[in-house]
Amino acid sequence: MKFLLAFIGLLPLTSAIGIICKPWDNKTESRQVFSLETPLKGGDTIFLDATASESKSITHFIFDLYEGTPLATDASKNASLRIIANLNTSMMAFNTNTPDGKYNEEPKLSTIKRGGPIKIKILVRQIDYQIFVDDKLFWTYNFRRPLLKTVKAIGIEGIKFTSTTENSCPAHSTREILDDFQTIVIEGGKVNILYGPTLQDIPFVDNSGGAPHNGRVVIEF
Image (cartoon, rainbow, N blue to C red; front, side, top):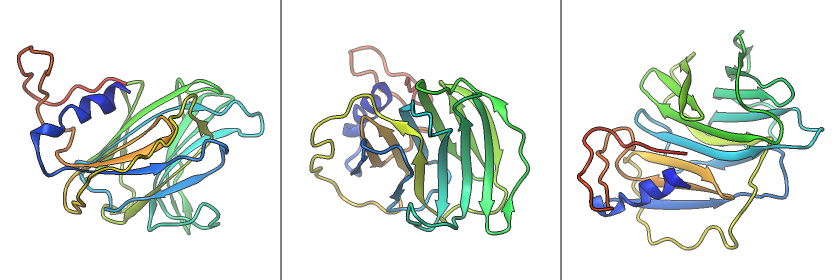
């Protein structure tokens, strides 16, 4: 995808880069949970590019950022952020889940619908999450609790990938950089976690021969 290729094009800018790949089970559209080697922190970025389920038995797309590393079958989970979209009505809401319940949040009409594309970008900041849908700022969700550095897993359900690559997680030559920023890219039947300079801050270099662009990286997806 364009945003992943753009980021990979930046790899020569630094030797301090690492990549961890986790395969996606494309045979199921139920919840899958992926642990993070490093807890989320301000400056991290998450991209999701997938297709919403077409199954009538699945009514919602759900994206969770979990405290700790729960299993997909765990009944009780703490989620710093839950994004949930009704695939029948396209209404999307944002929440924080705790053992004491969840907050009362108003849903908002989105472009997500059954069988349609889901393109989401999340910027993790010190006091909130900025959530983009179709590359447009859709919602800014302030932390309901001070949960940074406790979010260690991502859970997703109600999606599929229209195309995947055989052996989609090849061996990468990587070094583990636990204190660096991470960019989490969920697309093409895998979850890639890239460690290095954050996409929110580094300049974009045009490798096509044009002049470098100052400012933040422009990512298309």
